[in-house]
Length: 105
Image: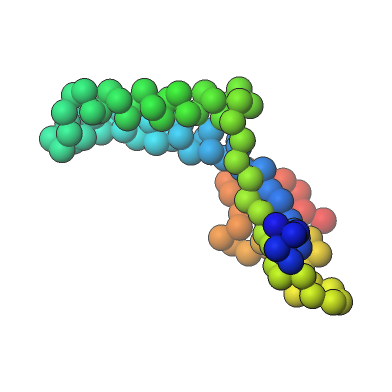
């Protein structure tokens, strides 16, 4: 990226989020099994259930990672982005239920 004049401004590891999301999707699929089977075969249902479960296990074990990279064309001066992620967490859409138990000072 840097050889293409991009400057990396932030990197966020999303592996734990992907593991949780996949577990949630598997749970929702299992809860709605009969509805799913009205649209796909039993074999296809099982393929997707197995695939998402295996992906969740792979993310949980650390075998696979995923990263979100924020980059910008390199310019002189300070980049036009906040220096921290604080602005993300100060917005209601940036807070999770887990954040609600954390004391803010």
